[in-house]
Length: 427
Image (cartoon, one colour):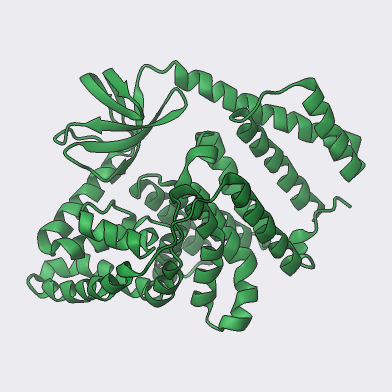
C-alpha cells in the first residue's frame, strides 16, 4: 500500500508540474509554500522534497517540449477530423493546437511529417507548397484501415457505413445529418472511439484468444498486442490511448497477481499522454471528457447500481454525471435528454458493434450483406425523435463549474472514504 501511494504521489506531482507550466511561472516562494504544505501533511521532509523536485521536472519537461516543438521545421499530423472540401487534421505547432487543411487528393495519415511553406489564419494552417512528406512507421496499418473503409462504403448504404466505421474504430462521421443527429441526442461518443468501445472490442478479442490459446500467458500477450494495434488503427485518439493504457496495465497487474488501485489506473494513462504531448493535458477536450467519464464509472457506478440494478445503466449515468457540467461550460447548453437517450440506446451498441464485425465478413457473400442495412437504419430512425427534445441554454461561468466539480468530488469522497483507494497515508 505504501509503494502504491508513493507511486501515485510521484506521478501526480510530475503531472501537476506539466499542467502548471501552461498556467503560471515557477518561483522560490511558490515552491517553498508547496514544500511547507507537503511537510505539514506528510511529516516527511525528504519525501516532500522529492515531490517538489518531480513537480519541477514536470514543469521543465513541458518547457523543453514547448521549445523543441516551437523550433520544428515541419508539422506532425495528429488525428484526422471530419473533412470538408479539404482533408483536415489536428496538429500542434509551437505547442499550440491547429487544424491543418490539405488537398483532398493528398495521401497522408496521422503521424506523418509534412515539410513545406504554410500560412496561419487564426487556428487554421494552409500549405502554400509541400516540399516533402515523411511517412510514419504506422503507414501500413493506416493503409489497411483505408482499405477496410473503402470496402465498407462500397458495399453498404451511407448511413450504415458511417455507423459501422464510427463504432468499430472511431472514424469521423462525414454526413452532416448523421453527425448532427448524434450530437443533438448526446450520442456522439459512440462513434468517437471512447473507452467503452475499446472495452467491448477487448472483450471480443479476449474470448477469441481464449478459444484459440490454452495458456493464460498467450491470451494476455495477444490481448495486449491487439490493444496496441488498435490504438494505432484508431489514429492515436486520446480517449483510446487512455483506455488502452488502462487495459494493458490491468492485464499486466492480473498476470503478476496484483490488482492495482483505481486511482493508479486513472493516473498512469494521464502520465503517458503528458509525456507524449503535454499540451493535451490542458487543451484536449475529448481527453478531459474521457478522464471524467472513467472517474465517474470507477467511483460512482457501484453505488448507483444498488438503485438502478443494471450495470450498464449505472455506468451510463455515473459517466454522464461527471461529463455534463464540462459540456455545459464548453458549449453553453445542458442537454438533459442525453441521459435518457444514452440509457435507451447505449445498451444496444455492443450488438451493433457485433453486427459491424459480421458486416465486414458478410461482404464476401454479397448481396446477402445488404440485410445489415436494416438494423443500422432502424437505429437512426428510432433515434431521430429524441433530437427534438428541448435543451437548456444557460451560460455557466468558470467559478460555477469549479463549484460543481468540488461538490461532485466531495460526494465521491463521502461515498468511497472507507475504501482502500482513499487511504492516502504513507505509513
